[in-house]
Image (cartoon, rainbow, N blue to C red):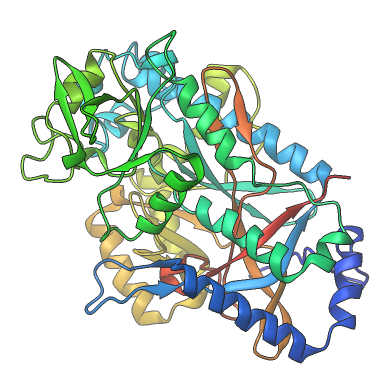
Length: 471
């Protein structure tokens, strides 16, 4: 695997300008003080209940996501390039989804294969011809970014359904401000705490009713969902109601919330459950999490669902491989943020290459997430590679493959002190009817294990605060 780009230190040992102040501070603070602050941060996370569960594990227990107290730093110029590329990408995603459910010009032009759409399990025929308020489908996007050198940021994945993690971005900043005020005083760091206001403004702008103060609610599957903490955190931040399916009902194609003061109309629902469970009259009949009749209200244009139903058609890893072409098709522009080169195993010549080079590649399930169902060739033994080879041969359309990128590293607190660890970044892009909003930064995920490239929390990864310097 090629040598990883160190975001703090140059190859000659010098410290990059953005990190100079942090490096001096780290050198001046005793190790026992840093250890104490790290334990204090862990205590705060545990006390306020920021945990997650891993589905499918026997006796699964709530876990803390490891938090690293050393911030990741990006310059204002780096963030400017990133944010322009993110806005371009989400704009193209929205145009693609609208087209897929209406005119399908991109399929007629042969840019994206039809079977990639119609055979996609996330494709929702119920959305055919359905116009959504303001023609926006992906109101909240989480775009995963990796870096390989001083100038190159790649998009690793598009999350267009219900991207999670923003509560960690906000809580990470809150804890850093509490534990390291002196470090903040040495830097001019762009704030992220306006995300709540930005999200509320975005949701209100999407209301299908004009001339009314929109009523917004967050729909959660309930307390047993792995991301329930985030659902309740956001409802509190926004000052809106957190509801379960049983709290809502539909009458005359309008959604109402049950309250002690009687029914209250709901205009915008930020839903944190999958399409399958939204409405038992349309999708899974055994769902007790959704709202009977919700789709009738949606199709009548009386409620906005964020994100829209059927957005999963745009965020699997096979569609991802077409995103550069999708951007060119709808916007007539070159992508500002490149894709990682990707082999689509559904194509025979691509499959042949992948089978011949398995030990060098990362192979992922098209609909996989959380770091599951993937092979990291250079980190796998012969038996693991051969087992994956059999999976590929049996169902090639279910996989894509990519080169093993040397993800950039950032300084990270480990047991023996500060050491480089691989990171990625998930910025959050909000698309309203009025404008696009992106808070400077995002959620940096870090592979806490030495040499590991897997940053997912379900695989032992942690998080750290992301600082965008405002000067």
